[in-house]
Image (cartoon, rainbow, N blue to C red):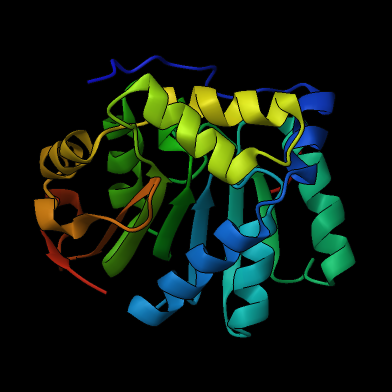
Length: 236
């Protein structure tokens, strides 16, 4: 079993952010949005943690015309690209950007959101439980959490197989980013334990691709208790 090897939580390097935005994530992002929409109710007010360059909020708003998204990231360079992408998509009136750390989220004091989503954020975070608890705090009663992240393989060879399968045609730097992310990801057992520590059902976590796990659950009537059922700003 591979040990978890952390990578930087986030980068505020403009060149790195541009490279990330140029990587081909369309298939993964589209699958994320389709799985989110088909598995349960979404919104109307959605919080996207670790939005990066806002590709998922754009796809989500194109898919669901009644949804509004608060898109949060800790890297200003990501948010600058996100604003351009949102403008090009004609969605400045439905996607708002907020510069904030997903581990703290002190900019929001009340449960404001019907749905909290996050794609591939947790493998950047040393203690993902902190982020998950913030999500629960910010959900309205009956709100939904939908997290998806990478799944750490059992061996270095399995990591290399996934890199070759999914990033063979990408730049070497992009391949290395995927390699590091797979080493930093949680195993299925760790992801299930994370859910239980947050008071969520362990069976709300499942493997959803050859390299992803997904947590999908609806919070009960008192979100601060962590009771749940398996379910369905501006740049400064």
